Image 1 (tube, one colour):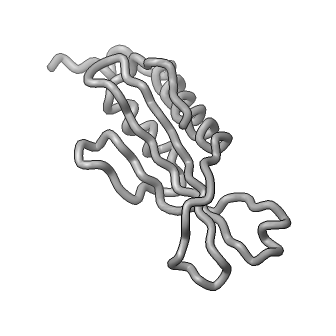
Image 2 (spheres, helix red, strand yellow; image 1 turned 45 degrees about the vertical axis):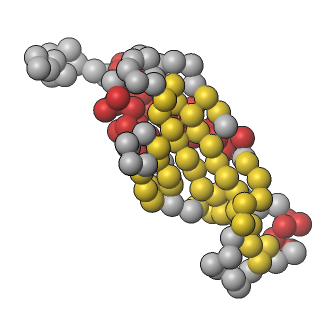
Length: 127
């Protein structure tokens, strides 16, 4: 699991950045909308794994922690494996820290770009 430093962004900005960074699509949310689960996506496989007939897919999970600002963002990517031909029987194989770090970096860069391009007059909300 990869964790960010506490960030001082608005919760709605964090949610929109997570949705934009999860380009594979969002499969579901937790009840309080603080956990995001991605749709299964293809993972680049090793040649040995492909030749053995195994197929791998990844599922990302992003969690926003904290009751109020600053919020901490945690990412986790689980790689599941199955035998070719049996698309319904996947089992957890390992955690991919590299993909989790890449997803976290993407979320934080989207937040930084959004904050940098913010117009004080257009983004002002009196209430």
